[in-house]
Amino acid sequence: MKTSKMCAIFSNQHEYSQLKPLTDERALSTLAFAGKYRLMDFPLSSIVNSGITQLYTLISQEKVRSYLDHWGGGKEWGLDTIGSYQYLDFYQNLMARRSRGEDYFDDMILFLKTCNVPYVVFIGNKMAANFDLKAVLHFHQSNENNITPVFKRVDRRNLAPDDHTFVLGDDNVVVGSHEAIEVNTEGPFNLSANVYVMNTDWLIHELDKAQRSGVSYDVSERLATLAVREKANAYEYTGYLRNIHDITSYYQANMDMLQKDKRDSLLYGNQKIITRIRNEVGTYYDKDSEVKNTLIATGGKVKGKVHNCVVSRRVTIGKDTEVESSVLMAGDRIKSGAKVEYAILDKNVVVEKGVTIKGKPETPVVIKKGTVVDKDFILD
Image (cartoon, rainbow, N blue to C red):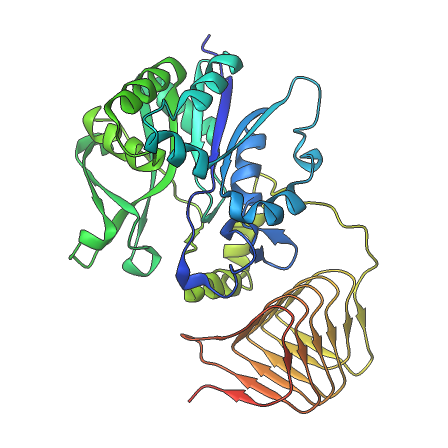
């Protein structure tokens, strides 16, 4: 009987200027999602739901605080127990070692050797998706591959310029890979989900060979190339997936959660999505409030109208307000008589009495963290 033991490499490499100002002070991984979650909850939940307790995490040292604030000691994910093993590394370390001509993958290789398990999964940080990694491993074992990439068929709206798309042959064999920016067709596209299951010994060998050749420290890019070289059978993911890479994709992913089928597919399937626990009272709803088709987290107060919104914790919405088709983050205060439509309000934003904020479905208004809005903000 084949073993199902895996360890994991969680890569937080992706950051996009198109997500500013939301990512001025936080990593993409820690963006709020669907009221009470963070984007990092999805890859982490996929990891621990497959029984993995040994985790190597790559992050940027510039935004480490936002990551550690949410992660804590990993208690909610069961990664603080006896037998678990966590290793935290920075992309800047890999870059510095490579520039000095040193072996920049040695820490990752040491982690893989220390875990001493036959399989490893590599997973990225920007896909709102719910992967069954046990199913991917079974597919990997059945096809006797060294590497098994996961892909999703998507349209162009679900592509970022630096994504990899696969060219697939019979039995979904990977015969080519392109950066999305190079693709000129209309689609659909075989988007790499930036998830790979591999034989551990094989990956150790490939990482050692790569650093001796001086290739890029970008592990994701290297794995896409290796999937082509190995003519690997790719695993097709058919569940909900939204690729977060700019303001529009982030906004739309949150709005998707107001649709029951998409919400159930991502949040309420067999694979539980785990997040950090906050012990708070429930949200208070005034007798004159009107809430329709909205996700609202705990600890808030609602006295006005809220339609088609995603609302995080401890948000206050005053009397005679109208909030529609918007994403409100923790601690926001919408004062009486204000109107907010097609907007993303970062944490602790205050909208003063009678102020109107109005964007468009394709271009929502983004209000920076901690801003006090005392004048109308309306996109033409």
